[in-house]
Length: 254
Ligand code: PGA
Image (cartoon, rainbow, N blue to C red; front, top):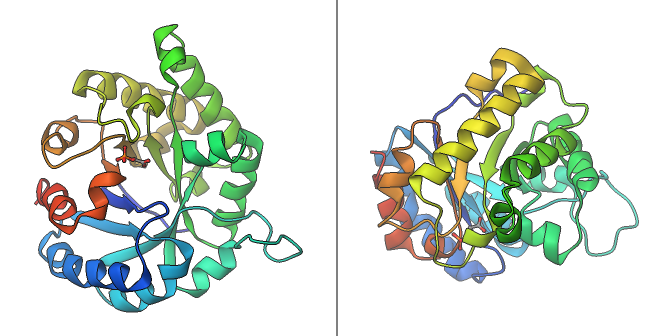
């Protein structure tokens, strides 16, 4: 199993954006930034169509490749789907699983996410497992319950050793794409609680697991977010489409 440790992870989730040409240009520009930022692991998650080209562009550099989703079956009659093995084939080290857009727009529940996590680990692809509460759930005081439920069910059947290969992304849904990031205090509370649940589930290994924050991260708020002691990085959406902004977020930790 791939053991990650708690080196700061700054990951770009491009969602359904960028042509192959645009993706290559971005990857070229980010390579020297990643090279100079030795304390940060930089990951780019392009759309499927750009994965091979970005994979070739960042090969042997300090930029790692990730995908935004995968199917849990290795092969089969699943029109329009991509397997973990296919992602490995084009150089992916990471795969984002259980993103709220997958959960909410494409009806992926914890059980499906759990099958995906297991399938990824089986072929040594590192999941970035996303969890997070909706605004109504926070408002009703249920944030902790929601986070525990998602962790318990998305990570069912995973053992402590395997858990070392997983990064957890705390992404409050109300903060995604809204320009309204969670405050340092809210992030500290949620991430500390996530680590507490991971400890309950997996014991001491919880200290070795990366927990990152995602939701309207920008170069302006990244320093405060990354200063939260329990936070081991960021999953960046909109700001990761702009090479200047994404570079500035990486440089916060350099
Ligand atoms: P955002 O997206 O930075 O645009 O809010 C984050 C994410 O969806 O991972």
